[in-house]
Image 1: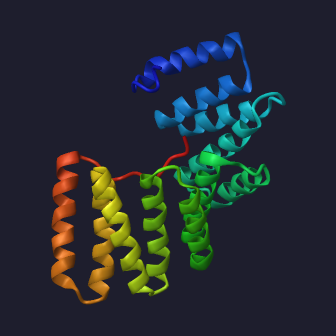
Image 2: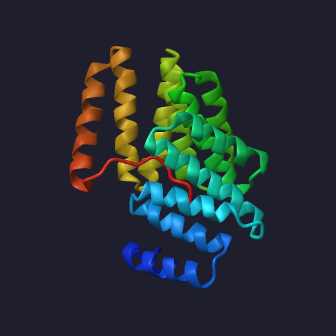
Length: 220
């Protein structure tokens, strides 16, 4: 409950106490999630490592922990370790939210490695696995980035417009602002300068009012 209400500092004290009283995969997992939210990335990695040492525990949680570890390594800039975690998670054949997060993260990793065709496939799979319109739009927006890098501007534009409609319909202002910026980049390359400038101005107003930029999707 403390985590849901944003009381991460209080939740951290509780999680550490529970880890001492009843150490388990679940106890170390909760501790890792809280440490991650508090940007204590190295400590979070250690908690997740300890969680995986327990043989007993829900199978789906092992995949979830590995996906969290992959995200942490991406935040710390360790590409090879990202891929080790993702491969291990993939072997567990995750389902539901874990499957979405896995393919989304695989797509992001492939983007960074400039393997754009493979990234497109991963994001398309994530889109099919999405639980809601927001997740679907995020995967679609990232898929557009891969098409843009390949010089396929028409497809990138189509996907970004679709993602933007979803973000606007859902009221996800920061996501919409991020998508507008990406769409503006495409429009500059296609010579649609007036439209691109309007999108940038709208995105800037949104970001100024919300005080944030849409963050990369984190595993839950």
